[in-house]
Length: 181
Length: 126
Image 1 (cartoon, rainbow over the protein chains, first blue to last red):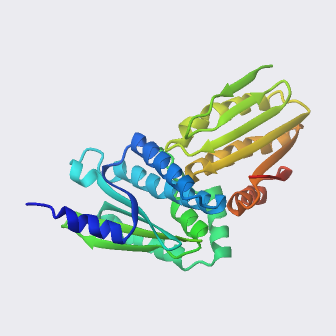
Image 2 (tube, rainbow over the protein chains, first blue to last red):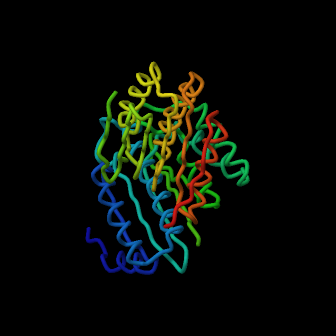
Image 3 (spheres, rainbow over the protein chains, first blue to last red):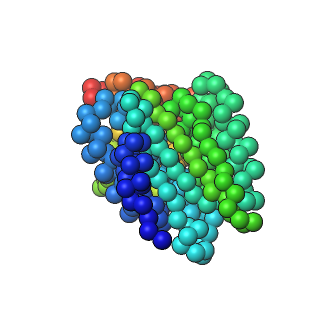
């Protein structure tokens, strides 16, 4: 099969993709992506306020993917461990898109958690964040269940997500985060 | 009494803890994937310091970025400081934020609401 590379390029161009990656998410990869994005944000001469917001949200999105990898498939095939990440800027809005496999058994609880977050107002998100910060359990690797709440709080937008059924074991979870200026 | 320090990296802050002067500073970025491992030595030093603290303990938190994984560990550090404050050392936490960085100011206020230690919000120029 030949990948239509121009079609691929054209789609990325039209969506103004600044950086994208598909594959296994490692700590070293995250360091590199963050360095590249930081210099791109500097080159665009973004206001410090916007630069910080984009960087912070990016860190949370990428680390969500990273922590999720071992959860879903500590010893699974590379395909299942693989994830996709893109960041683009259209007009004055940054878009961060992530996609990763998730066990079908975890779909309902994640969906419920994200829907619950989306029901909260700015003030309620602040209270919920403090509650989870103070009482929540932390996983051994350091994921604390705060990431999604923090993203919703910092962007001031609803979490936009979807699940695509893949087979009887996995679904593909995608998250599309908007950061407006 | 000794000074303990950890050199900063692109993902972890510089930590200086001068137990003789009762001065602790956390400065830079705190965005490691595994923050528990990173903060463990500091939590241990504070545990030790709590046994014989100075009469006054000043803490400077000057972070440019921190992730949610670090936020729990920073809370653990503050809980140790809360115990030290209760135990007789007068603790002040100086929370630095750049002007315009509302998210960082709010983060400081979140901790202030949870932790029973005097906080000072210190605005610095960008």
